[in-house]
Amino acid sequence: MKTVVAPAFFVAASLLLTVSAHAEIYKYVDPATGAVEYTNQPKKGAVRTSIDSFSDAPSGIKSSKGATVKVSTTSNLNSGSAAASVDAGTQRTRDGTRRQVLADELALEEKMLNEARSSFNNGKPLPMADEGLGSPKYIDRSKQIEKTLRHHERNVASLKQELSNLKL
Image (cartoon, rainbow, N blue to C red; front, side):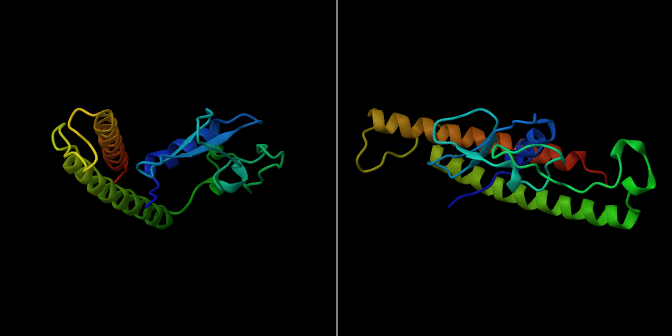
């Protein structure tokens, strides 16, 4: 099962906001866990992704295929003009939607974290039928389970931080 990790999306969106004119974004799917990671650094097994596929990209950025990403904007968001603001009801709706998405992602990450903790078994995962306790295959699998566990712990912490930053 492939899962998309919310912090990875935020990292990808952040990269797009600060990316130069010749940006390259790579999408890496961990074969063991299915976790998706977006990065601007090439990585073995990563696939170069066009920034055309991201709707959040600022206008005027050229994708890796040379096409210009077009995003319509009505004004400079820093100008404080009326065109750059929304009414309170719309903002509350957006904030509520964001809160719900983050809460759903947090619930999913906590579930995966609990599964990883169960598999890790306090540092002593149960060996598979073709593994011995000290075999290289067992040690590699144990390290991968621990890596997955730490990954989910970081994701849970990040999601909780994002939720705590939201205005009530």
